[in-house]
Every structure is written in C-alpha cells, then in structure tokens.
Image (tube, rainbow, N blue to C red; front, side, top):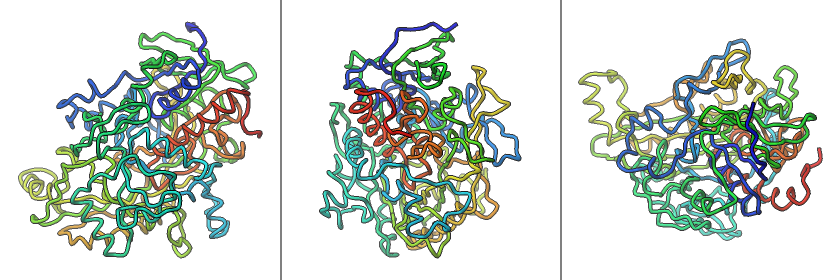
Length: 594
C-alpha cells in the first residue's frame, strides 16, 4: 500500500526544461511545488567536472546521461502488420534521465518557430488548396500564433543566455549584412548576446551558400559568446569551443541547461522541493476521472508513494508524457482504424538528410573545435519560404553546418572504398580527420494516421506496466522532401570544391532505422489544439478531460518543425505558466470550453 504524503499545491513530473520553468513560475505565484525526477541528481559538478566530463567513451558511447533501457523503453514497429520489439540499444534517439533531462545533454541550438508552422494546415489549404495535403496526413494548427508566443520566446532567450544575430526588431531591420536571418520573424528585442564566432567550416558553408544564391545566417545558440547573468541571477561563462556539448554536461557553465540557468534560483525558494529517483507510475484521478488528486511514484528504495496535489504538471520527455497519460487514463487513446481518440495521435519525428565533404590536405576544418548550437544556416527551403506547388510535398527544412565537435571515436569519416579496419583505414582516418565537414538538411516531419503511440500488449517495464509502443515509418511525403533537400544542398557542397562528397537522400524503399542516430526530436502524441476531438490539450496545454492536469513539452506539437524543438517547448511552458498564474489559479476549471 502506498505511503500517502502531505498534500502540496502543485506536483511536477520530470525536471528538465519544462519542469524547471514551471517550478520557477509556480513558486513565484506563491505555490508550494514538489518536482519528481525519476533519474539521479545531476549538476555541472560533479557531472561536468573537467577533465572527466570530456570522456567520449563514458558519455557518448556508454551513454552515461541517457535513459537506462533495461528498466524502461519503447517498443517499435513500422506498421500494424508487424510485432513491435523493444528498443534496447540507444542509437536512433537519446532520451535523457536525471536532473536536467535532455536539457543537460542537448547541444544548444535555440530557435524560435517559423510562424506558418503554428498554423500548418490552415496555411497549406489557403495557399495550395485542401487537395494538396495527402489524405493520410493529419497535420493541424497549434491553436496559438507566433505573435502570442513572441514575448515568451524573448523571455526564454533571456533565461537561456542565447547568442544570435537578429534580422528585425519591432519592424526595424538591423541584421542585414551582419549575419541575420532574412526569413526570421520580427522580434520585440535583440538576443541577449551577439552570435558566436563561426568555425572555418561554417565560414566555408556561408561563402558557398551565398555563391549559389541562398541567404546564409548565424545560427542562434544557447552557448554563450560572452559571460552572462540571466534574469534569475544565474551566471554563465563564455564558451571555449571545446567540442563537448551534445551528450555532455558543460564544464564551462557556457551551455544553457535547467541545472545552470534555473536550478540555482529554485534552490533559494523555500516553497520548492526536488525529489530524485522518483519514478511516477500514474496520475491519480477521482472516480469520475474529472479531476487529478496527485500522483503515485516509486522512490529510490522501491517504496510506493502517493503525493497528493491540487495541480499536476506533466513535463517529462515527449513520449514519457504520452505514456503517463495512457497509463493514467487521461484522454481517449487514439485508434488508427477509426481515427477516433487523441492520446498517441500525431506522432512525428525528424526528416534528416546529410552530406559529408572531404577536402584535400591544404584545407583544414579542424572539426575537434565546436559548440553545440554554433554554425551557419540557410532557410531558403525551410517552412514555406519557397513554392511547394511544383514539388508535391508538404514541409520544409533549414540546412546548415553546425560543427559541434567531431569526436575521436564516433566521428571518423573516410573516403569511399576505404576498408572498415586495418592499416589502410587508419591511414585514411589520419588523412581526412582535420579536412572534412558535415552539412545537414534538418527537415520538418509531418504527422500521419498510421504513425502513432499506444500501450504495448506484450512487453512491460520493471514496474510491471505496459511499455509504450511506437508504430512509425517514413512515408512518401518524407522521401520526396528528403530528395528535394538533397538536391538543394548538393550545390553548396560542390561550390566548396571538395575532394569527395558522401551521402544520399532517402529512396522509395527507405524505412525508419533504429540503429542510426537521427535526432532526439520526437513530437506529438498529446497535441494541443482548438478541437477536443483532434487534440489532447487545449491552447494552454491543459487537458481537455482533467482540468487540473497540464501536459507540456514537444508532446504538444501536432507535427514536427524544421527547427529544433527546445525553443518552442520553453516558450510554450512560459505561455502555459502565465495562463495558470493569471487565469487558472483565480478560477480553477477549463480555460477553454470544449
């Protein structure tokens, strides 16, 4: 029988970016807040202590900061005719665990959103007609506009200490010929810090992109270009381009993380309590399932604990949010055969295409140098910045050289025809390591009827609960877009005059491959919207069915974005927190009438 604790005002499930933001916002509102993180305590020290932290074997090969798949994982299949099997070796995507979550091990690429992607279906129907969207594609609008979210993007950037070059501020163009993004939406204020310096590979990419007629710009990065003190009083040091961002805790306090940018302020809050090694099993509901009464979790000693609360914030990683909703019975599970139900619906991922270029020995790219969010991008084919009509696919993609530091074990490209081992392989590695670069088309992935999440009927986690099942594969639209983006990216590579070009887009028979890293940008499953028949949460991320449950994170995205999701996740967290503070706490109940 569970040990029942004293009730708190709010309980937060997960302590990554969402958990940290919500904890700060709710304690500021005067609430007593308990945050439950299933993993261990992590922080810059000792997890980021130098020189141990730049150990590639420990962190990026043995995956120290990532989820332990022997305890809980997902099962995966391409379609309903197959039997899903557990994902047992981290490769395709890398969910984190411990305090900071993915916000501790992320790279630091910190984008906003292209405004049309917040109203994806409406925009495409208006410009291209309803028939342009494939019948099996279930993209939809977020239910919130860029103008509504803009103040919260600005707030998040000031917390993160984001480096970048603005294009326009309050309608005034300020970034022309300075590295600003011609396609970026207007801003209310500048970035907190100027853009980082660009690596030689990014400079080569920028020059080549301009030569072929594109509009290169400085990537916005949550890696500091200078020392910085954020709005919570948290201090950051300037990035030294060590090349150990993604998969590591930053020993320089230069990469934004919940641990560096928010937790120090929360430690000063008497109303805040963080409990680690607390694995939440379910959100507890009243008999009529109209209201949550708290959560049940298993603590570090294996004891079952019930934490009563008036408000429940589900703020874990994307598919953990969906899993917890399904286990708790919040919202109707999605049925792909009937199209009914909302939880598990609109699951989307990321549609990547990569080209690697190897140069002769006189061209040094020095790939060991790098910062996680630093680089140069091109948005000419992102979102709907070009006419999709002749090409027959939905979605777009930024392209970039984002040199985050090529590691000595995992980052060893060699020319075509090189043996996989032996003296010739070693010689090729020595010849090419400091003379190569990688460029990516980072495509927006759309949502489809046949790609979804539900509970697996066979496999269970260590607590005896059904694992989450992922039914997912690439669709025709994804393949068309990947091929198009490759064709647009290849001229940039050729303009740099490489000795070798390697890479190819998806082909007609391409299937999702769990053994090759893509990104950890999972989206959907508990999406936001204006219709409870097609969304699990309303425009404020509040459950349509259980009004005192808010489900926040990339699980709310109705489809994937061309950009990395973290900036929009943070903005939505601040947007939801404002609604809770200014509306919900004054009059608890649905913020939007169904």
